[in-house]
Amino acid sequence: MWAVTIQDGQLVVDERPDPEPSRGELLVRVRAAGLNGADMLQLRGHYPAPPGSPADIPGLELAGEVAALGPDAGRFVVGDRVMAVVGGGGHAELAVVHE
Image (cartoon, rainbow, N blue to C red; front, side, top):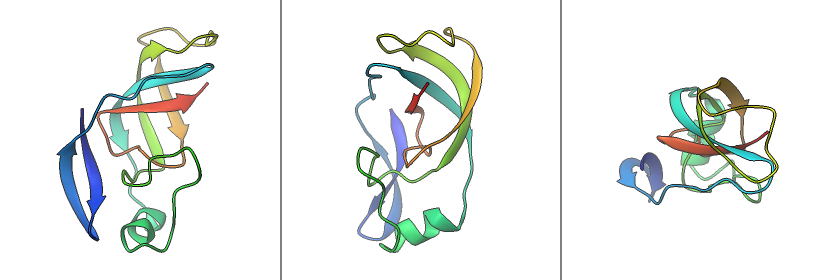
């Protein structure tokens, strides 16, 4: 997948492996993502991503369609439109979110 990444204090579009959803998670094909002050702080090294979130892919809010379900995920089906607030990773083609 393609993602906007933070490399040496710069935003760089880079190819990354597709993430895979774990238990109770969804894989979302991102169609829109917010850009806010926290993203800019992360770019400058002042807002670290929480544990388990991509440290080098900003993006805290996203919207898109469910592309795949992890084990035990059952509230949504592939194709459902969803939005999420995440700890990072929203500025990518694909993102994993908790159900």
